[in-house]
Each structure stands twice: as C-alpha cells, then as structure tokens.
Image (cartoon, rainbow over all chains, first blue to last red; front, side, top):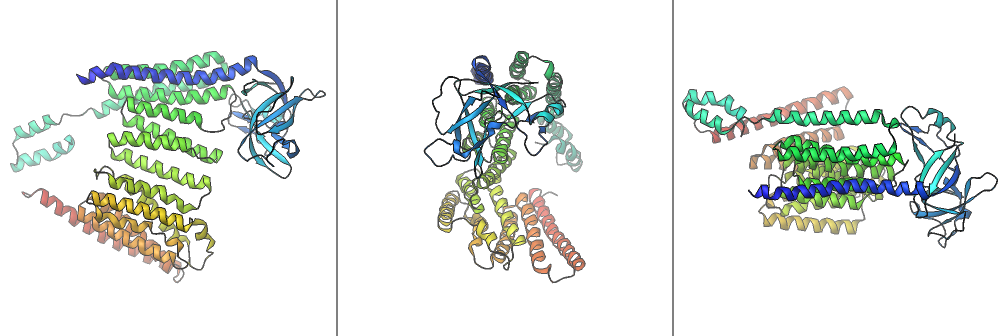
Length: 176
Length: 410
C-alpha cells in the first residue's frame, strides 16, 4: 500500500533528475554554440611539435604559436605566473600575417581595445624564458582513420577560432 | 535459503528418517525456485540492444548533422530512463534497472560526445563529477546494487583520470562519493559493496598522497581513520571489509619494506617514505584512541592487536625491516587464532594466506644470500607445502568439529 503511494512521487523525482541531465548537456552545448554565433573570428597559426606523432586515435593534437609565450609578456604584479593557474592572454592581429599573436599575459582579466581578444588559458609549465599556456583548443576531433592527412600538416595550419566576450572559445574550422 | 542444497541433501534426510517425504515437499515449496537466470536474460538483452544502438550511431556519426546528434543523445538518455521506469512499474525489476543503468551510461557518453563536437579539451573532471552525482541521486531513487556499482566506478575512474591526466585530486568528487555512497551503504548494508567501496576509498587515498607529493606514509592516516570509524559501528559481520582493506593495505606496506629494504641500503628510501614524525604520531595516536574507545563500546577490544600493523617502525634508525617482519608474523598468527576462536572461515583463510606470505618473505630475506639458488627454491617449496598441509589439516578438523556440533544426530 505504502509503496504504491510513494511510487508516483519517486517517479516524478526521476523525471526531474532526467530533465536535469538533459539540461546540463544542453547548457554545455548552448554555451559553446553561442560562441560560434556571436564570437569574434580569429585566425591562429600552428607550429610543429615534438613528438611528431600527433594523431591520438580520433583527434589531432594542435600546437599553436600562442601556446608558447615569452616571459617578458607577463604583465602582472607577481614575479611569475603560477604553474597550473589560470591566466588571461590578450591577443591582437598581426597586420602582415593576418593571424593573432600574444600582446600580454595577465593574472586578471585585462581591458581590451577594439580588435583585441582575451582568451583564458592555463599555465602548463615554465622554462627559462618562455611560458607554456594551454587554452583547451589543442584537440581537433576527426572521424576515425581520417586524421592522417591533417596530422601531416598539423605543424603549419591556420585555425579559425570563435571567441565570445564571456571567455568561451571554440574551434570553428581549419583552413584547407 | 539454498534450494539447490535442499534438493541435494533432502533425499538423504528422508532416507535416514529425519524428515518425511511430505515434509521435504513442504520445505521445497517453502523455498520456491528463484528465476535467477531468467531474470538475467532481459538485463543482458537490454545491454546488447544498447550496445547495438551505440555502435550504429558511432559508425554513422560523421554523416549525422550536429543538431541531429544532439537530438539522438537526448532521445537515447530520456528513452532508456523512461523505458526502465516503465518496466520497473510493471514488476520487471531487473530489466528496469538494467535500462536505467543504460540511461546513466548514455548521459556520460553524451558528455563525452558533446565535448568532441566542440573540440573541447577538459581541464578538470567537473563534468565527470556531475555524471557521478547523477548516478548518486539515481542510486537513492532506484535502490540497487547495480546502480551503486556504476556510480562507484564513475567516481573512482574519474579520480584516477584526474590524477594521471591532470596530476590533480578532486576533494569534491572524493567527498561526494564517500559521503553519498557511504550513507547509502549504511542504510542497505551489503558485503560485496563494502569491499568495493573500501577499496575505492583506499585507492583514492593512494592517489591523493601521490598527487600532493606528500610523504607516502601519510596515506595511512585516512586509511586508519576508515578502520577506526567502523569500530563505532554496532553491526559486525557486514562491516568487516571496511576494516579488512586498511589491514591489507598496511600488511602489504610492511611486506614491501621487509622485501625491499635492507639495513645496509640507502636510508633515504625510508626517509622519503616517512611522514613528519610529530604530527604523524599525534594523528595516529588520536586514531588509535578513537578506535579503542569504539572497540570498548561495542565489546570488541579483542581485535585491538590489529593496530600492530600501524606501528610506524619506519622511524627506526636500524632494523626497521626486522621489526616489520616480526609484526607481520605476530599479526598473521593472531589473525589465525582469532579466526579459529570466532569460528569465522574468512579470518582463517586470510590468516593462513598472510602467515604463508610472512613465512616466505622471512625465508627469502634471511636465506637468499647464503644459499645456492636451486636449494633455496626447493627448501622454500618444501616449507610452503608442509605449512600448507599443516594449516589445511587444522582447518579441516576445525570445520568438521563445527559440523558435528551443528548436527548431533550424525
């Protein structure tokens, strides 16, 4: 008796739980789609990396010029960025190559003028004169067994990124 | 209880006149044949269907438009949950839970697929923690061991991934798992789930000290905390895995030192292992006290020698390996003795295994350097065989005694 009284209530809780899961997925999707819709299009140059084998099953590892930044670009009060910490990287377009390059690395969100973009990144490690920063844009998923040709060119690609003002950045396309 | 056993032994009882044929019939009717195998078939069937759908979608993934992919994921999640709940209401409990489990798994698959769609690269395990939380709530809503297991697996694997991939430890995920699944377990105690929960807890503690680069022996503080907490539990038999796993972990640690450390060797090995003495000793003493008070409250002071394995001999300037070896021996003998005294086969078996292990490591430690290798192996084998025979004979006698006590007519 008791059990059957409880059942509809439990069922509706289950319904709420399922709805929350769907909402969660929809939220991620919307957050990144919104960047594709309203984000600013920026071109990024990739550079070769070691090891050469950059095809991991179903994605190609990309290494951008902006992944490696000179220490002199660090523009904050503390002497050096924290390993594993978040940083904000300001980019501006290089007029001759039409690609975006780093103008400064900050520990707080910096102001930006028109034409400039700020990406949020994470400090992976530092060596004597450079900071290695990742942006979460370093993996490009491809259909299985189709990544070989892209992999061979991975060191010299122009990748289009859409960067939204609220910090979400997504790979839009890769120039053929 | 066990119908199969009843069917086997029953005819013998009627032949001896202990019960009549009628009574046997009544007894058999009292334990109806459970449709165990038949209950598994829908579970397996639902898994096959799920796998089929998944592989079909995966094979055609590239040709499906992004919007269609999202809709497919959504339909799959909602569909599995809805079908599962429907079957459960129609009293197909197993099938229902199997499908609900598939719903939970497709939620995780959805997280990964959405990430791939946007070429996202995870920085941390937040989304996996969300997945684990969905599993946790689901386990409370639809109580079942199956969902408990999936949830435990999600939390454990994501922590493992977090440690190996991001060199990070998520206290949030760890806390949610320990409290969430622990509280569920307290309300529905189950031995298998206890083993797995305790194992996951211990593995995550290992990951913690590794990621934080703490001295290894700090590992034993949360582990002995787990042990001590369960001294306060009134239940006894169902909680033993929570204390067995800490003991096994400590035993293995001692064994490792016995096998791989020699007094002459570089002492930085132990130094790197050793936690800061003052705080570690204080913490250990506090846990010991907590454990003793718990044991005293529930009349279990007899099990206090378990703490032998916690003594931090690694602080000794000399002879740490010998001290550990002694501790291993005393502990395994004590465990064997308790096993016989409590008439508890699990303890006897474990005690036997640990005793043999200690003997062999002592033998290896002391005799390896002095003996020709072939003699070493032959003698070692003989010692093992003799010990095994002796312990086995003792066990058989003991089990026979129990049987006689249980069955005075035999």
